[in-house]
Length: 290
Image (tube, rainbow, N blue to C red):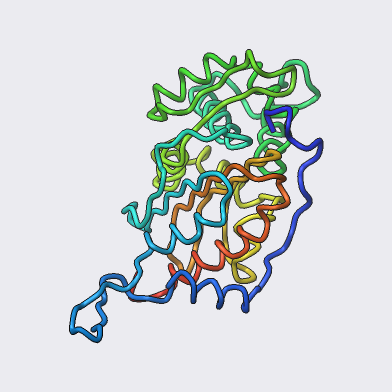
């Protein structure tokens, strides 16, 4: 991760956790099973709307010490939910998504090849991309970033429609760089990747495969049902924990972006992500809300 507060090694992979009792309690609190817009008659005869997903999100936000930013897009790209979408967060390893985009765009233009060596490392472009995305390897991301240039990466991101994504090498060291992004920028990148509008077909397939090969499943996947397909990328610092990707349920693919901060330690976010993953899956599988 690109911050001095990042633990020296990534968290180990963690398989999905059922947590049925926790999910039941969460749904009772948040009203995840309620149909949006449905009314219930009060004793006085008035009609009150049942909780919506927006209400559910506010309940989930209570469990985040800092801020919760979230974007949820449906299979057609329609926005199903949004919270603090334009609020800048420390990117943590989400910056690697934008580095991968810049590298693969250069591959598409013929300026780089996947078997080219990365200066200052023993890696090729292809092996650096795989380590950076699927394993969240910090030296690989730093080597690619230094090679392309942090200022150039920021200009590239802005020029390609990600205006809130920044890189600040002056506050980093040889292997780390500080930066920010927003849930909206991350969601836009993933949506364009999903639609095949970000890169060539070959680079799109490679990028998606790297996300599918993700080895760090400690966040949202810990709350999903076993076998749920989630091609994603995590971002982790001592006080920051993010997860975003392409979630497939019943053959329908959604863009999910969750960004959080304010944690006293990265381990503190694990139970919250387990409950949030379970709640999101339940909500998206509800036919009344699909």
